[in-house]
Length: 175
Image 1 (cartoon, helix red, strand yellow):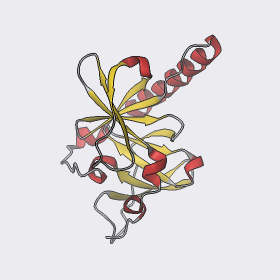
Image 2 (cartoon, rainbow, N blue to C red):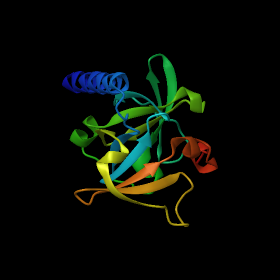
Image 3 (cartoon, helix red, strand yellow):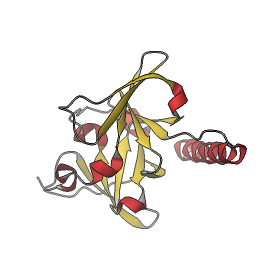
Image 4 (tube, rainbow, N blue to C red):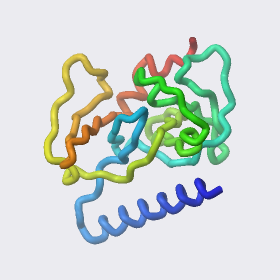
């Protein structure tokens, strides 16, 4: 219950910060920052949907290990993808670690009823939060965007959810 309240408070804070920035003419954050398997990612806000606390996920047989099943989120069935596992960083999670995870739905404009299981929400980030950037190497997946470095040296990998949602590997959940 406390987890739901904390998530609700986060959503309210994020919405009010975005609204305040828009009304004051300030630069608005571009990304939702998340953590998955100890790595840090930036998801474009225009590609992200709603944030939910982890809920009951019904397993679906004969699917990829990264496809956790389906969940009922606000009356809609969403396929739940373990982002870390999909990216090849499978990990064992404790019950406590699982309790801290969240489900992030894809924006309805992407026309895919899917939610990503993420380990931790890290707030909003704008370009001003970073000191340098690097283009993705040629051997990275097409949905990897620019890598940004913050002042503490942390690397943040941009993930283009629109490009991810169109990848055949992401769409092929059958094992």
